[in-house]
Figure (cartoon, rainbow, N blue to C red):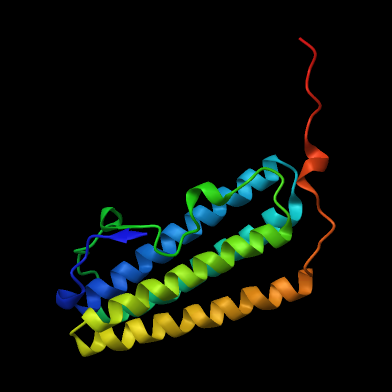
Length: 173
């Protein structure tokens, strides 16, 4: 995860735009992962990644509505080039034939990473509105972690899924 942002100079509008971009990036990554899982016929992992993509999109829409209410159609001063993998799962985390438990672990790591991002940025923030927003976003990441942990408990530690069951035997030359 990296960013190219001076948090001490961040305005509330820019912070909202940043948060929207973070959600967009995560939603896109989960959608990519879901498509990969569908192509490998691992429906449970695909379904979970679609669920996560939906949640990220919903949160992005809520932030966008808030931004529009406060700042109308004012142009953005931040863009995706200023951040990378803030909340999105690491791009190399998707594996062929992932189990639901593995998918949940990927999501939990992404939610922890997002919490850490807002937590590390918080002391650098000067604007009171941005501080309030970042505290809210940080707290929401804890809620998201709890949600994933609940799903992990439902799925159980061993879901009976062995990726080796999908391996092909070596072909004769």
